[in-house]
Length: 173
Image (cartoon, rainbow, N blue to C red):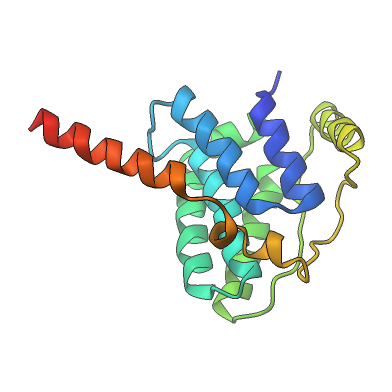
């Protein structure tokens, strides 16, 4: 019923709190399923994960900018939110509370999305059990690899992809 990558996203978001991995998982899914439309509901979830990643690192400007974009996308696609098992009546107040915390430069706190489909929640918790994760566990902000994951990863594939895109663009001009 729900895309496998969405379940993986939710597991990382709520269990190991690896927001960088959330971004990576849904970005690949988004590219293949929506032909890269930047206003896709999936981009809203990607931006939410990115905002939360920035917030945890006290990058309040980045967190604010990406969360505002996520809220705009979720507002445009509010009819899809419920179809993805999330209670939109609780989601929007949560997002605005997070935005206020970011604007006031309050420290990051772990939070859960308001999932209201018991089947989705069951699938996510089963996936957590399979991976040895705990659903709803607080983020370990002392884990520097988790908190600073973007700066510690191997960027070789990203750099190569960018070069390929530049070369392709030059070839088509």
